[in-house]
Image: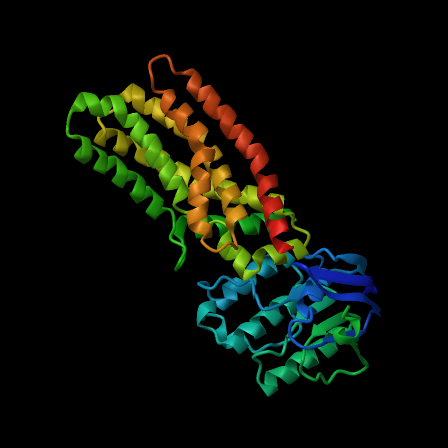
Amino acid sequence: MQPCRLAAYDLACRRGDRLLFKGVGFELHSGDALQLAGPNGIGKSSLMRILAGLLRPYNGHVEHEGTRALADERPALDPHRPLGEALAFWQSIDRAGEARADFGLEDLADVPVRYLSTGQRKRAALARLAASGARIWLLDEPLNGLDTHWGASTQAAIEAHRALGGIAVIASHQPLELSRLRTLSLLEHMP
Amino acid sequence: MKGALWTIFRRDLALLLFGAPGRGGALLPLLFFLAVAMLYPFAVGPDARLLARTGAGVIWVAALLAAILPLDRLVEPDLEAGFFDQWALRGIAEEGVLLLRIVAHWLSFGVPLMLAAPLAAGLLNLDGAQLWTVEAGLLLGTPGLAAIGVTIAALTAGLRAGAALGGLLAIPLTVPMLIFGAGSLQPGGEGGLLLLAAASLAALAIAPFAAAGAIRAGRE
């Protein structure tokens, strides 16, 4: 597998008139994991969207080698379609082959996405991300709505992804049990 | 990339033609179009000459209103569900996605309108020559209406009351289509068809870029 890299240099983010954070910088290589921590509203999701390239930073820049995938609160799955079809839509775009991670969705393949519970929908979004074949995983609150069992499975999937040389950035206010986890507290970067 | 765009196009077309819960398909604008054509003779009376003289204009007004009807489901649901973000992450340009959506939108409202036009022409007592002019006008004008529709849908997606605002914005922008389309039916108005084609081409050329710009600006 090709090595991947994600680096942020002196990032600042402004929403409206408010500067959310400034001076955020880090460099991640294959196998690294970074947790973004901080209370609600501090800008974790905005930083995630900056790292994904969806939001322009007010200052600084992001460099990446390797494809990025984002799982946030919007699963991008058609609500009226059965889960299997909704996931197949993304698989036929990504063409990355079978997903390695198991999120226990086999029995739900015929259930329309709108009937899924919050936790099931979260697992579906994580399965879409895992199946995308992307090297850099950007996870915005991946454990929200998951029970302890699937919370642990998700973290195991992240560890497996790192073991294969992937990068994971996780915005979460919950404690994560990942090895060699680096933490970036946005509280230290408030203006 | 090509395969991805084809997958996206098939999804667009299926959604716009057959609809989904909360996203009615192609049938609703079509019925609306026919309903207007049916109501008009009731309102002005069964004077065949009056109907034949004004009917083509009514067809154009009905077509314009039918084009406005699906505006709120052209872009908003996909933006809300995060589809556009996921496409952007995969390096699929918004311009491409939105051009495909214009084509899918045209196939799901322009073509059905052309198929329904003979029925509407019968209700409004248009003769054969007028019907052919209406069909030619719809063929040339509806792609432009689709392009303007998708642009406005992208501009108003994510706004509160976006649907009502979209309808209001679409009316002035589509007035040229209405004038050229209805004008082509006047004696000596054949030039109207050429102007209609020109307006359509201009709208088609600008729309994917304007709509993509609107989606990107909405992320900020």
